[in-house]
Length: 95
Image (cartoon, rainbow, N blue to C red; front, side, top):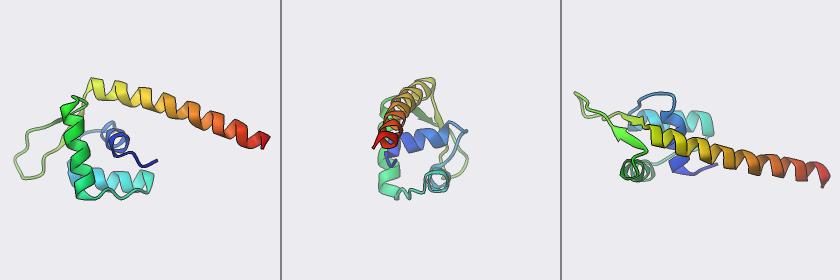
């Protein structure tokens, strides 16, 4: 799975993180390295959709937080992915 939108949301559901922390977390749990352009493009889209919010910070690193709408979207996408995985596993057993 390599959709940056879902990977960023999955990272932030654990708690607030700044960009580098999101990149490191995603690489750790998904084995996917998000480059800065990909990451910040996804962050911009997520903010525009209201799925994450940038938080105030005293230093140059800006943390982000998932919103209730972002959690709902992530839950819907996970349910859809779960259906695909269950179907694929069932078909593999019968192949």
